[in-house]
Length: 214
Image (tube, rainbow, N blue to C red; front, top):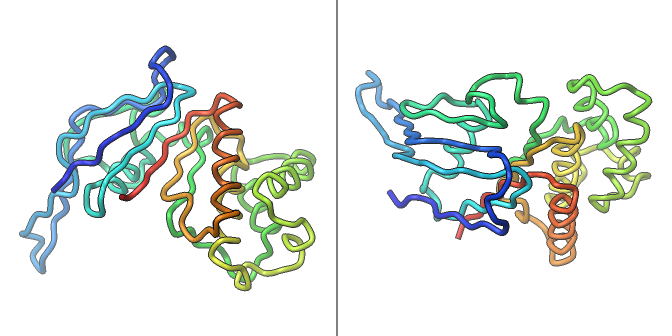
């Protein structure tokens, strides 16, 4: 197993947004669950607030496993960590986090506007704020408002779904944004726009955690 490497773009001069020490994850497989598969071993890292942090590695290096533990989706077998000063797995950090998965899944029969309104409702964002926030995010990700209002998501291309995924990741104005392969499925113009969004987030002082496979 090859451990993922990391890359930073800023100096560590701010409070820590992500901290993990000796994280490990072992899955049990087989009919009797008597076989063990080690997905991540001895991962330790720190990410400072306002930093753009890159987690780089080949397939199977444990990048997604680490991300799932940071987001509280799975529990570590060993080790400890904090997200925004809160222990891993504590649900109180979720309101402050944005997440774009590599292969986002949406409700096919909703429009992009309806889906973003649904996600905003989960974050208890008032309707008055939604009416301002949703158009702003659609403009930011380069998705036409008319398309977002009328076209169901089942008719979107992978690149268009990626744009909707970025918009939903930012709907709650998160302090830290996790982006798992954010360029996946995008054409050259889409990749350029995604880079511009990441730069804009950096200018806003957001912490950005990027996962990239090489």
